[in-house]
Amino acid sequence: MPSHLSLDLLSTTTVEGLIIEKYPRNLTIFRALDKRRVTVDALVDAFHEHDRAAYAETGHARSVIDMRVSGWPSAYGISVFAFDSVHNTPCDLVESFAFVMADGFAARMMAVMLGDFIPKVRTASKIFFDESEALHWLRERDYDLTPRRHHDAPTKVG
Image (cartoon, rainbow, N blue to C red; front, side, top):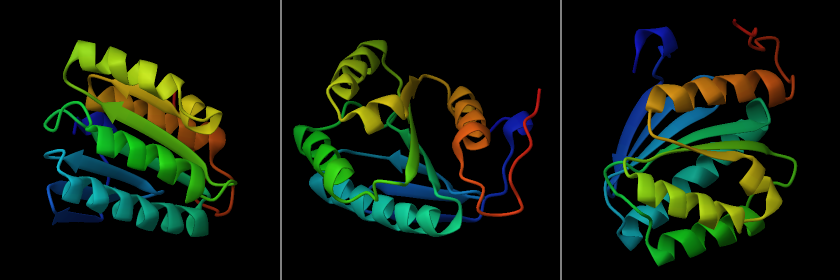
């Protein structure tokens, strides 16, 4: 991670083709290493844990979904993510998803797919080719959208 966007890594976990990096203020980076069903299921379980923690702390779950290694999501992954977003996320939880992708064509297809999601997911998602740009966007969303439940609210920088 570039030094100007350095964050304090709280923990790293690897489970079933997925690396999960947790940072302060409910920022989690999910690095999918493949698109097997067991990886998708591990990602969904990790999202649930992330959402519960964010809901209890700041009310804003910020996520980077790094798909540069795994590539385009499987049909199973897309359907599980869509179902889970609608049925298992608290309706008053603010969410921000930054998808980091390596391939321009896959990113364009992902943008089309996200356009078909429910409005909450569509407006809370953005596709990036550079992780530092994704983190910058999430930092801005943290400042603009995070409910002020704690005294440690971020200050907007330049």
